[in-house]
Image (cartoon, rainbow, N blue to C red):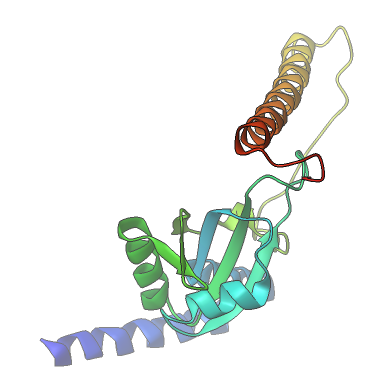
Length: 194
């Protein structure tokens, strides 16, 4: 059984090399990018105080970490939990991270952290190359165009979602402030508490 699997891996690599010879440079770059995506884990709900060396040392228990990149939160305050892309050395390590973090508490610096981990997707990367053969077309829509009403509805929906997101972040920050105020008043900490 093991010999057959070895033969299949050899055949797949041979076919991949043939494809590389026939492929365009854009296709090769995109295929390398997809290989990198398959080796990457997306970790969510990390504290904003986490740094790249801390995350790297925490994930080194599963295998070799090649790169740690933070996903910036453009829409909210910096106090919200953040997401991180952790690139491992191979796909087996990635699957080990995902299965372990989903079943057991994740330990960072000796403390369990409630994080979520899943396989990364290509749209999570900032440096994603253009997909070969894909072209983006756009055009200006005039008010007498039949698609003008659809575009106006999408624009209103985007504004509504932005307003709802802003409102929910303000509510979240207000509740965190009230909770901290409650803890301060119930614990008897003086006015020097921040």
